[in-house]
Length: 387
Image (cartoon, rainbow, N blue to C red):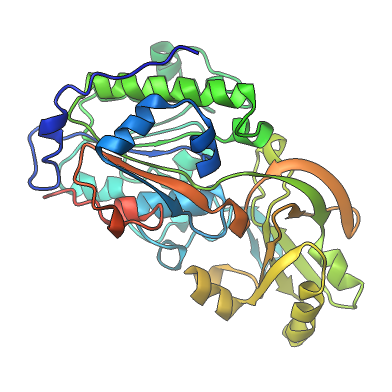
């Protein structure tokens, strides 16, 4: 791999950001999907690591459950799920007994940073590898594009559509972001990738190393284009290898408890994770079974923690009207899903539990008081657009 450092031209002037608004200010918020701290630590990413040295870089936490929709919504609004309302990738309506993806902006209960910027007459953009991030998070964007479903205009500008289950789809996304920042007079951009490579490869695997090294170079190109740019970079979750699968509904059924168990990770990208993730919501047919169900699940091998809805909402800042009767978290090597059997051996890299919550928090080109930052959403919660 060829190492590539950007020039850092204008860094001294950029350090003044946060002390007063500058003409031509550019802000780039980046969520690298699945980019746990172990990936950063293992990878040859000289530019990103140098950015952290010049600005600020620390290990932080994602929002639980550690899945894409929850954390993209948290970052794009600068709020917890208790406020923005996105608590899962996939929701269950107890009244209608219908399950569906939680991927529409109508579910988001708080304004996005893009909407806030629009009110200040700033030009905005959202660029994402996953189309569901576009449909969920792009409210307020003057430009919204996804690599998964690019319109003809973007194919003509950026290049042919790439395979969703590849590293190339993220390269397409970064190329699009660079072109838009250069040519479309954008003041604020939200950029989000996809985590297929992390679902497929561990931090030390060569394809992962190449993928992140190349993203590092592409990030350097953006900084070289805009030496005074502000960058706020984080992730939505990490990733771990899973060896055991559990179907909580079947576990409870064996004890005469009727329920629906929704794997929070579930979405259209089944190649990533086979709808197997480290957390689930359980909806009980009879709420009178709650105490017994908690006891059964706590005694189930692979289950780490079980919360009732009130406890879960308080502990993890979740919207109480959009979660199940129970919130169940798995141990590091276990996943939940709608398996044929109560317990099965599996082989998948996935997320959703507490064990995928360690992620980077990076600020570059702006004043970085890193003691103010603990969660990924703090990057945007503390971002002042009109200073």
